[in-house]
Image (cartoon, rainbow over all chains, first blue to last red; front, side, top):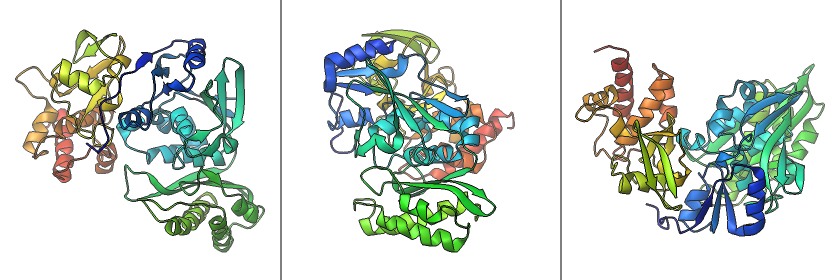
Length: 290
Length: 157
């Protein structure tokens, strides 16, 4: 066992069957309660005492928070949907391949069988691999509380490592994004091929018309305090011809947008260099140049 | 708190503490010692069990989360006492283990894979086993064992 992993401390447990019960518990316990979705992040953190809770609120018995559905031109993914279900969904594979690709290289199958989309986003790791694809797909998250619901664009949701716009009385119930004509892709660079955290990850979306970028978006993970959009890269490519030179030049601009740290996985300099490499490669993919 | 669920085909009903992981519950209370405690934080795969047919980490689940209708399977439930399943036979035949610590997790992961894909490719096998670590590093024999298990289940001797 890794140093610091200990048996779970004493705690209370509740498994509400309605959102109303969840809201009441959150009101009573405030930040002394922790929400349990897949548990793949929370449980290890509690064993290491980097997360503490008097009460665990298990969300797994709430009805209506799982599923993937196309409503009009929007794809709705329930917050408690397991990552494995999203990866295998024909709708996601067709309408949002970048998201399915990202999940395919996250953790391992047994983890993906439990981990949820709401959990991956709410944990707000800078390296959360579902974030870059959802950012380029212009996703929003639906937050529910006793006061009602609000929709937050994902681009505004992340505030910093482990920090989001989520209020202590809210839960993330749904992720919603428009289905758009175009192609999306995701690339990840880790220390090894499988079962590892991203050193750098990148997603892109593009719609190409008559050889030009009619619409183009790129987002990166693990290279800033939050997952980020590469706005300067996007502006440089907007309306430009899809060719290697344009993509390479624009991809270099990402180095001015990332704010990487150096840690056990890579140095800040390496992350900055690789940001441009992954940006170039993923843009070439969605531009149809590879 | 009381939990009731199906374990290896038998309904069990037990008192558990909220902070008891399913792993500790299975090992310490039910005495299912095939479920191994390796890293206890979801990385190693030694504690893998099947929950409703899917491989999951028992160290990341609370026992209290189990509910009526849930079905948990460990290696003990693969065959009648004193007998072995085709997957276990394949691991023996192809030397798919050395120290054996990772083996129960490997065998259950094999079952989940073959139940879904009876004839997996080597790539599919590698993908499925991404989260099961073998520190004796006998991975090639494990892949051979999975392929042999697929043959045995298809009725080839």
